[in-house]
Image 1 (cartoon, rainbow, N blue to C red):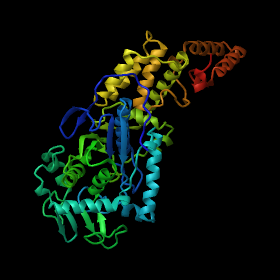
Image 2 (image 1 turned 45 degrees about the vertical axis):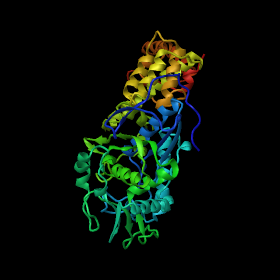
Image 3 (image 1 turned 135 degrees about the vertical axis):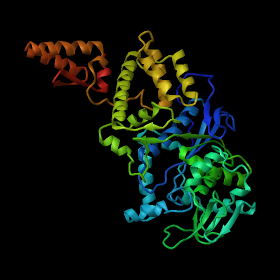
Image 4 (image 1 turned 90 degrees about the vertical axis):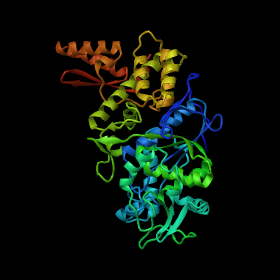
Length: 486
């Protein structure tokens, strides 16, 4: 199940650094087991479709995995599917999200989970994320493991029973809130958590909730019929699939104050080991300064982007233009610009591959590309280096292809196997001989030499271009075939 194929990249001694939320600094990556990296990523709550902010989390984790694979690590990956237990909000009050989705669409929670899990997997595959080498466990499949972990926490004296369920007693854990600092936990999480009827302390959280009238999902347990708290699922699945301690845990920055600190607390009490050595978080996607969320009604789906004619990998390119730790403002103008830039990149890639005859060589530029991305996923700098390389007239086509190959292993932008490029292209981005033909055709049309104009049209079409007459002259749309002519 786990991947063994290593991407083709030049050999590099460049170390890998990640900004670690746990330490608050950029740390050198050293895995628990030499040559093996284990990574768990907080996945979707499948009560509805995932918006592009959720998809940034999947791309963030995929980029980390690609960097590790390219460095010859054997990467073991898990992305959980939350199909039970997640309430609206991070506290222990509010509506059950799965119940909300099921009642909205008049189906069972299992049906709503299946529907939106399938859509999520389709979306991330469209973003060129290889799902064949990732495990996607569902919380509902690990109820017994969650119950067993709660029992262990209770036996050690860190849990207490209340009228509405079982709670983790954060007052007994002196370092609770160490992820991001307890001040941040109080600032960001405290405003969203209420002291319910069964809680002793503000930050105590539910491990198990007793069933309420109307609950659609419930299981028997030592504490009565009910369902698990949201946080316990991740801890139980990490332990069951990856072990007591893992290398990397990823998620959104909004997970830091509550969800991830709760994971740490319950896991480390249950196992006596650190949960993860590296905690990596990506920032929000915003629209007009507001975080994308279902509650605000401003979510944009991948299907909204493709419906406007943009390639799904345009979203991937859009994300790479900024650091993952930087909030990014989405706009339709920005995604259109990313789409056009990616298409230009594909055209240049085709030119390079045609000229290099698919033979690549190593170069200092290729090694620098690898080193740049290994330094805390510096994708904006790596993209700039890629463009600089492709425009370098002194670099051979074989060297450029080597850079393309190294970049594609990390970016996953289909650079060495691009799809057909659709839509017209600026004349200055075309091969020189094609630019000359366009100029000659425009001159022939102006001189009313229509026979010559038609002959040039036929020559352009033979080279793989569709030819249209625009208000400013000849407009051509290249296809992949246009770069494979001898």
